[in-house]
Image (cartoon, rainbow, N blue to C red; front, side):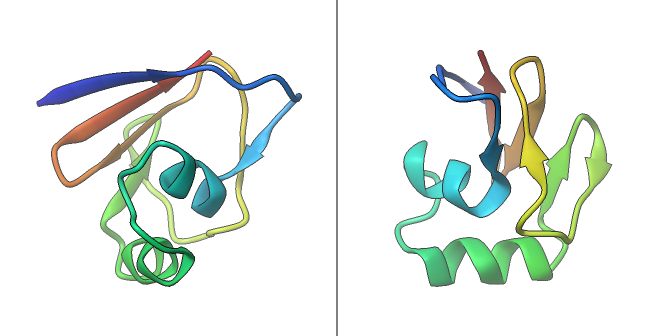
Length: 70
């Protein structure tokens, strides 16, 4: 599994925006589809809310890429 650290400068970032920002999803549409399909997990649990607030310390996984938010 590929691991990636993403540093944010705000209190949180929405899940779909994080997927685009980290380069895991090429477009917002791709991010939305992946989340709605149940392909994304947050802290080990499947998440289907694309507007979920992701905060530093959270770990998001999609397509073999693990994103640690700092």
